[in-house]
Figure 1 (spheres, rainbow, N blue to C red):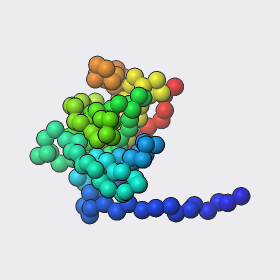
Figure 2 (spheres, rainbow, N blue to C red; figure 1 turned 60 degrees about the horizontal axis):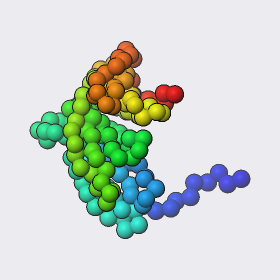
Figure 3 (spheres, rainbow, N blue to C red; figure 1 turned 120 degrees about the vertical axis):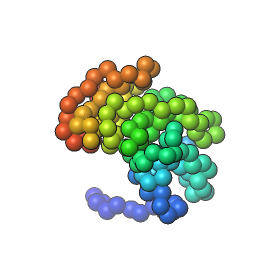
Length: 160
């Protein structure tokens, strides 16, 4: 049994971005949520090149920090949370793997620290740390369907 972690590769990003969360899409692309610059970086893994950096904020005037991201069940959309603006940015994933900003919606609380997609793909579960709650948001209506008081909520669990 080999308990060692084997180092495979590195990708270096521009200083000050603050990579926080990443998803590898199995098609050789990595999507990175940045904490300090509130961007999603789309990186082609084989070349290690950033092919796109796109803001997650509607209004770049707000102080905000990126937290987490995930794909819709069919991988046609990418969702990214913003702590400060208290929003969830929605992007269309284009055929070339780049992103097109569609809109933002409320996370239903303050400081969305972590969020996940429900197993059937209908709801977003958002853990809103400073709002002391967990919200369940219907993806189609973009409305909070359940708000659960929860002190300092910072991690989400899968809903089955």
